[in-house]
Length: 350
Image (cartoon, rainbow, N blue to C red; front, side, top):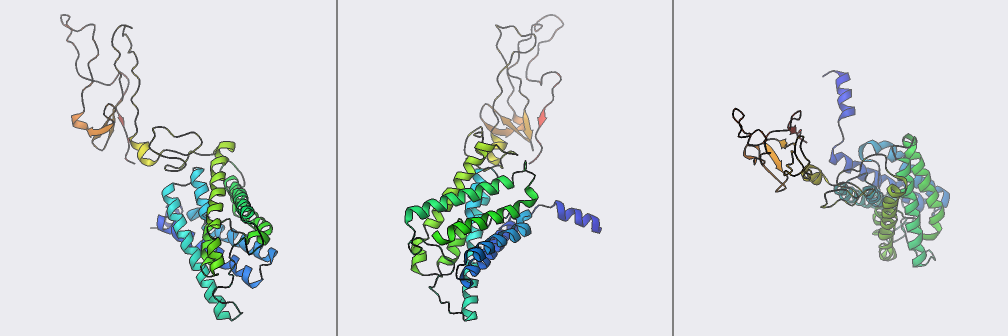
């Protein structure tokens, strides 16, 4: 293989699921290690910590965005799934990889701080989130995390919209948005807007962080879900929803604005065509639907039973009345044949 052919193959071959999950794991690891590390070493300086989180997102999104989309956050994955950008199957796998990446980031950061002998010990705050210890009420913490995550997801969905000419600069805009969010929320909750980031350090930060952890899982997911639902409703979508995304379920037609049927539904849900009068057929005669049979790999879709049958055993459709049948020299027609000018539709393999 020539170098040109190898380069073309490298650019056209899509990343595997394993590569996507590894990208999400590594990206979340870097986000937690850099961002929470800055919070610990600078004593939660607002500017330094906010910029550390924002810059970490920028560099990881530019590094791995082409592979996995650069979520690094279960709330982002949930919002993207509801907006039709990613399937629910990948959303679950992405979220698991992100949580693992966050835990590894928290563990490596804790070991690094212990080895550095800077006075940090297990149970001390490790860039963790909270509300009681920050002097902020539960209701206020819940509200601020929902609102800020909603803003964050709205920015992400907007700047990555293919109708927008800012796609090439999306990681920069997303990183700046995350930095601005930290400037607001660091004094209030320590800023989460990311369940994986909160989980990653909570188990190394003592009982208070673990007791408050539920809020920093629930609130970002709620905020991300709200943005994922509202963005396509308010602003439309630039492309068809990904199969298996949105509110996909066992229905024959996708709900407009809320995702697409999954791959199973797209392939198997074929609706019977309405019977239309044939040319030359009188109004009083029975109407016979002349459907193009759908054949794939030796199997034919039977709209009457809504299942696939062997093509060689396809049922014959009722014969259309022939006004010339029974006349001398004019044999009657029987069985089924495609309408004139039409051909059997063959579905290519998926």
